[in-house]
Image 1 (spheres, rainbow, N blue to C red):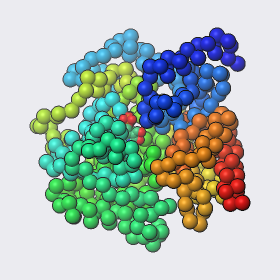
Image 2: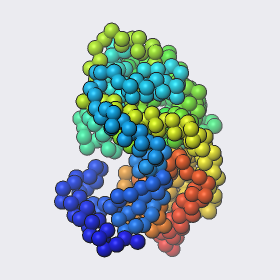
Image 3: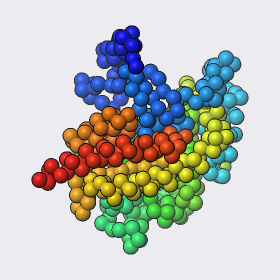
Image 4: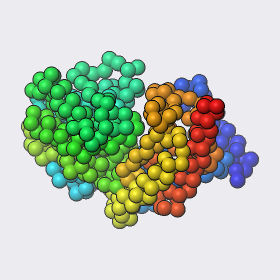
Length: 450
Ligand code: PLP
């Protein structure tokens, strides 16, 4: 229970926040942020002492959960030893992290450029791709998110991009492998993977000799968790090989155990030439990202000047946190846990779909999932418009919060991405709350129909 002093402190935090802090991705005048000063494992507590199960892993980055003692200790130890040294200097934690990463990334990815997060990882990935190929164009997809800096938001296709246009030149958009709502009007099984053929056709129209890279989220994240058919990624790899184009896998959200594999692309038997990472690399304890590049690209750019880097690239505290996080993934067998809990998640999601008319589709790979809500299963019309909101989703969110569950909702999507330390009992607790929230959504549909 919060005391009177706790309440005063929290009121002061809230007042100062609203007077002085500008929040990301929001209309400032409408904001009423929750006050949180404590988190542990898969839970956090608000200033009133109410506990929430963090089904979003915050921004799908707290893969290892909050306040993991090994990671906290590693940061403290590194702070005692060396808080900062410039990126141009070799230092123990940075080199140890790069070596450790090369043991968990796909075999050909052995060289790492460290960044502050995911957006600048993608910015640097395309700079490196342009440098290595001498070509300029980058193909990326409409339903994608690659970060909010100017280059990364241009690579992004979703509605977060147009307000910041014009972006950088040379980015071409293609459609996505979104089987539930196929752009090409097909059903998986009889579709001949039109979504991959369309990428090749686009490249031919653009002139393959001008295309440096195709950039994809291996499994699309914040646009709805699209798990592509296996053939799709295999075909993209073949297209890249045919036209000497690089394949860049953005694993910022899908990496580090989220899907029950170290990286989502591993499940498709495809290796990228460049891979970007952030978030789960150190579970968000200190800002960090990385661009991993293949031996062939490292050789191609070895004699060229690398116009990349920020003051804090590869910060020693962040690298120390990453080493401890990766070791924890290994020691606690968390990737296997994500895979096993993914199986439990699949079963629970299918149960929800059977029970609730408002559920149009459920999909998950490991602990990366989405429940897509519809007005009508036959027409698949979304329960709120794409790029829109509505009272029904606000009611779903209120119910979840009242049940002590924090989930990321966007449009008609409910994202499922708990810390990968979660166990079966905790998953069941989460699904009971989601079940109640979906009953609320069903009620809206019934009232609209009557
Ligand atoms: N790429 C993907 C797939 C993401 O989901 C995100 C962020 O959510 C980013 C890049 C950008 O990462 P950051 O916010 O660390 O810049």
